[in-house]
Length: 219
Image 1: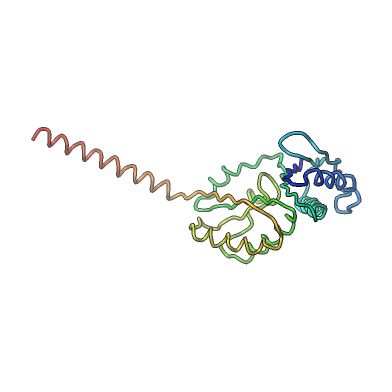
Image 2 (image 1 turned 180 degrees about the horizontal axis):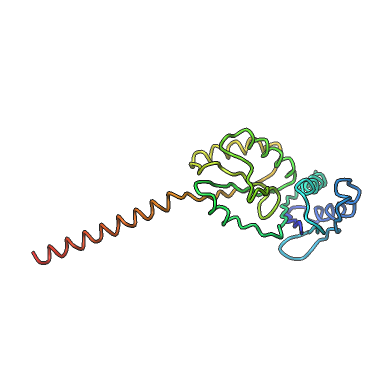
């Protein structure tokens, strides 16, 4: 598995130097020493740096790597994203379809201090009754896949509820210093029923209008 780093300037050259130095000293960190971890490297392509795991990392190990990157970026003006792709290729769209009347909000963080943001989000989710940490097939989505953190709504949210939630998110993330994007996706089963009903009504209306024109024509 790869953890891919995308850098945002200024000071990208300094950020790359920090990542190289971190890669060279990873074995000094006890929590990652037992994990066989290949050295990271700068690359040419859509991302700027990769760390390669020779076996699937745990969430704790991913958090440790993110914490080390956060610490190494202190004092820089650069920002970064980290994406660790799961070999199992979780199909989020399919999972949403299998969760009728529910929704997910997916967050992508632009660090540094992504580790602090994740801690704050976990605390926030525990405090709000409408939310729980997002999982698919009982597997946490934290730092795995395209997004960094997912929350699951226990029912389909109203727009004002999403806005209120995002106000809380801004408050708890303020100290972390991260930027973020959020994508909310859901599947509301009765909307499909409503659409079918509206379609039937429209067809009945068109048929009635057609019959009315016939009566008018031959009257």
